[in-house]
Image 1 (cartoon, rainbow, N blue to C red):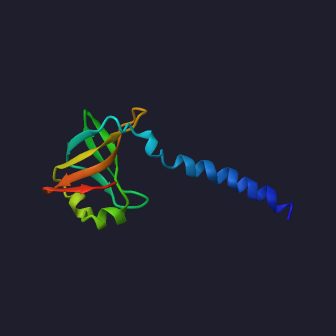
Image 2: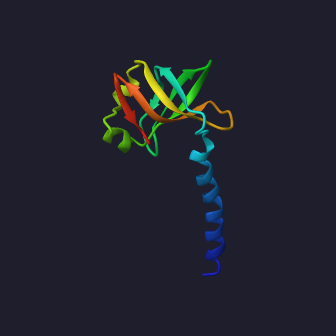
Length: 117
């Protein structure tokens, strides 16, 4: 039993930092500075733990953090609506550290507004 303990401790030491660095957490976003962006999204990824995409804003290509697939679909949003290339208005929060990334709270596509959080 004592020989297995160091292996268990080593596994925890290796796994915990990797999990912690996988997602910056919602506190990484500046909720005092909501921004609105309108344009077509590109590189739409429809997956969990949350969807992702890219959008051009302020001369840069921004990463867009969406909600989980289950939440988006439950609220009537489909992958096709995002990937169609039509203009979409995104409302959300930028990263505090200056990385070109938005955490989206709501979006409007084809005249329909969808709350993601």
